[in-house]
Length: 134
Image (cartoon, rainbow, N blue to C red; front, side, top):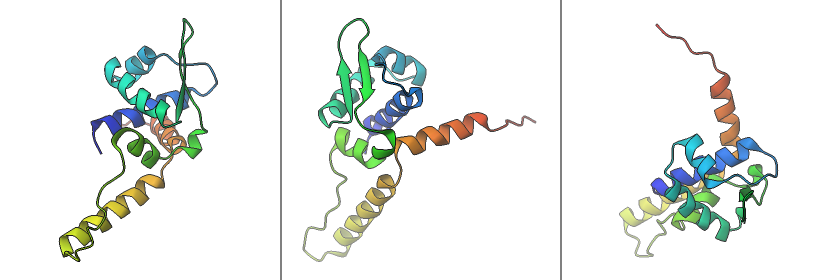
């Protein structure tokens, strides 16, 4: 996992939160989420190749989700931009290798259980939460 994964999750959450079928330009996603445009372009390219996003060129161009946000997991995003989460046991029976593989498996399971729709819902709840200042 890398900063690219975090950027990809934030950017996809922005597209999903807007809903609809109108393409959203990279610059809008960049400005709304405070992410440099070149980083958004890099992760969107990987997500397009992975079949998560589709692009439309032209004046009214941009990106839209190819799949329902509830069907795109955080694990899908991480693997699209960073590759598989490592940690497979090397078969030597080494306790450290086994612990590493178990940790990677648990991490993958946790990321598999959260979708882009879940993230959008969490953000909406947080935005509606009352703020108390002392």
